[in-house]
Image 1 (cartoon, rainbow, N blue to C red):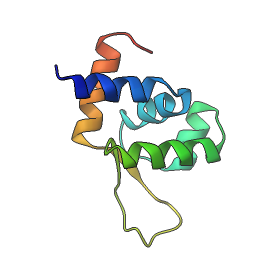
Image 2: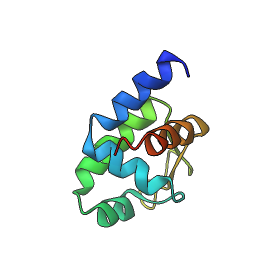
Image 3: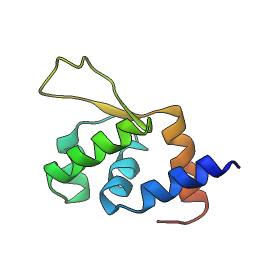
Length: 92
């Protein structure tokens, strides 16, 4: 495994909100509101986590950027790989 993967793993696990967001997205694409409800955290924390994870190319917006309601996010292939490492290594 490359160093970059460990850097990305470290990035995700350094925030409980990023962990919860990726955990929920690992079950399939969903909206920020559903992530917040499932993880029992505020929508603002989920929104920030999604923005951060998107910047790192770990999650992607599945609908048009123009859409303001009902935005659906999902893990990228890279995000799935990182989440699998986190789960396999029991890091959460």
